[in-house]
Length: 280
Image 1 (cartoon, rainbow, N blue to C red):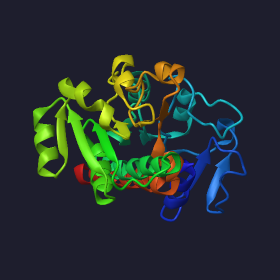
Image 2: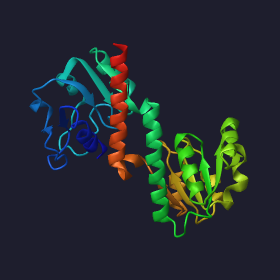
Image 3: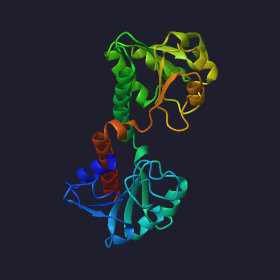
């Protein structure tokens, strides 16, 4: 959905063509919609693939399209100096485009995109919390694992809502910053001793951090929300076996705030194009 709003946003300034969407998804009159790559009788200066651009490294990630679109076929509509954008571009896909002399940029590596995305992810996580928790967030004892961009925004919002926030991380520098911001801090190595006291746990670390042993120490009514990318940081099978309440909240910006998520991609893309023009 964020791609549809991105297309509408860009159509206000550029000539936009859309590929990989059913007709009833994009309804903006200023966007030219193609049903398949064979219909595309034009050459374009920019191609913006989705996030992630592919789930198998071969076909475009296009859940609103009835037919699969091989990523390699996108080269047939690219001008010689076309710029390719996408999210989570694999090494093989990058090399495929680069071998044809095309410039490739992964907008998820832009800091401004990740900062904006952290806001949407944080709000999405809080939305899930409010839906799943039978109480107010105010007064809840909250544990946040990791202290990256998402954790920083999430912790600040939760604190302002009256939650008692503890940050657990491996880096002592992260723990120092957490204390500066007014949160409790706890090194990962000492996590076990405090796990029983939390009502809500958010994980942002994409490696196994809440294994069976640690999960067994949590309060049985604790709400666990994993915000980490694949493979996640929670033993989901154990949670299922023990009937623990866990939610793996992947791609929250695109799910809960698709308009904003599309705008964030557009901002990153235009910033990259501005940087390229300055270099030239």
